[in-house]
Image 1: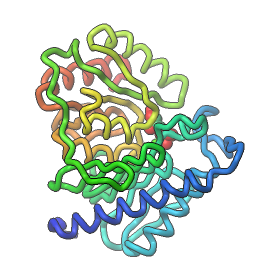
Image 2: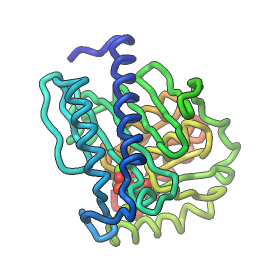
Image 3: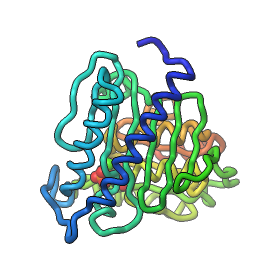
Image 4: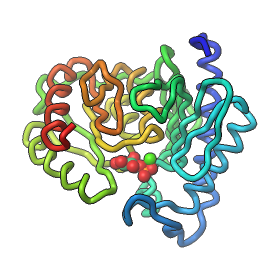
Length: 286
Ligand code: IPD
Ligand code: CA
């Protein structure tokens, strides 16, 4: 597919918002009493609830109706191929552990990408939306069109990063941890080196929302190892469109991958980028 024009990008963004909002309503309205863990994935802490699967099935059905030629790649079981060259990359509940515990920091994340989302660095988000059904926040963006937040259907406000702190030592940094114990050990070792150099750290529990928090100026930087395309696709675009530099393990000119995503404002990028990629190489061997 050739590069979509602004009207096409806006139409894709509108679809992302519509389906993310509808799945976000579903996970709140149809949450069963006494919700538990339906199954686990890579480790005992990597959980799936019946609502993760139900929300993904819902997204597949809605996207089948609104974008029948496009492929869908989701975090849970299922997905489908397409003919258009576009893929919808969906996380039906990002922050599943928060959802299980009813901590109000989870979201439905929906993005449409060009390129192959199964190949690291070979794809880019075109449009996306992240919806937190508890706060009522809807974050949305499309390539070149800016990033916006609305709350509970209120007016859309354009997102911009907060002014960069003068020093890395004044930066509030968000991060997250994987589910495998071995990865967590390495992530903890990296934290020992990072924490004394920054203002403080936040672990909020949803990568999609972490990137939107950066876009909204609520943290100064974010990094994480081990993310999948569905965790980061929509948030990557929201953060970029709000003015963030989003880089990968090789630096700011490289797309984020499961090895490393880091993001911050352009002024902080000159010190945070080299620091975090260097620490990742030291502790994760990447
Ligand atoms: C997880 C969240 C978490 C991040 C993990 C992700 P899930 O996604 O985004 O913040 O630290 O790496 O796997 O499992 O809740 O969809
Ligand atoms: Ca996720």
